[in-house]
Image (cartoon, rainbow, N blue to C red; front, side, top):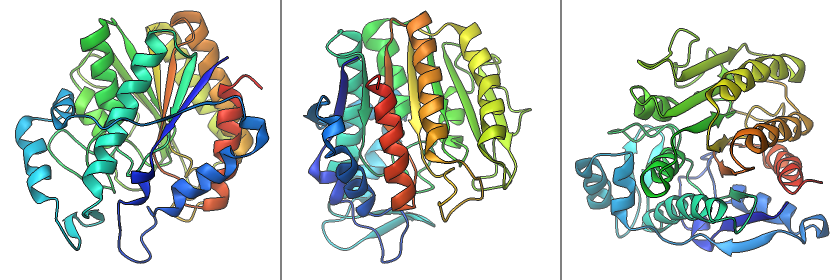
Length: 308
């Protein structure tokens, strides 16, 4: 399998306050792992910068304009209790969006089998009209809408294994029967949403919450439930909100997964992509705040994407 890897140095320029967990060193940890000769076969590219209008696939014009207007020329501006904008943020955010959209284009064009986009900040907490949880624009949601709008795909599945529920993605797709949003996550935990009873108006929201201290065996059982729903949905493309903060080393949560669990989940989704979507899968980095846990998990994830 040919795997496309997209990132850009601007991911390091989104500044955050001292001690903030969503820090530039996260991207450095990913880059260090992928320097290993095991990943020599990756097709590497730079995430292109999207026009702000691309974000309106998932967010109203007014919201996008407000974010652009709030971006500072110096210092930092808090737009949420834990979400900030700095002078380097908008280029990083727009390249995160551009990378996700470009990866979809490349996979659908058959230029690669699958793709991994590693940019920051993450996106899955960004609701239609609200930034939160470190997230400004929801790049995975934008990528799903782009796949439908540009390429005419009938059904897209967005699978989210970040330890925090992707309330933003759920908000955006609540009434959208063409996109299945399926998440496994810890509850109770920020942001507080994601109970199994939250199913959307078209029954295309799937939440399988986990309890604090659940381990890889419990995660795999929960993920099998998600796989059954995605299989029945028969998507034309699978997107992954790939957060690695369910790793046992992560400081922001209490699940006890190890890196092998992410490799297993990746291979399971690749099997479904082969069955329904011509192998088309795009993974987009979300959370992961232990640098060691993040690095080990990305190693297993990309290893699986490459078919090792």
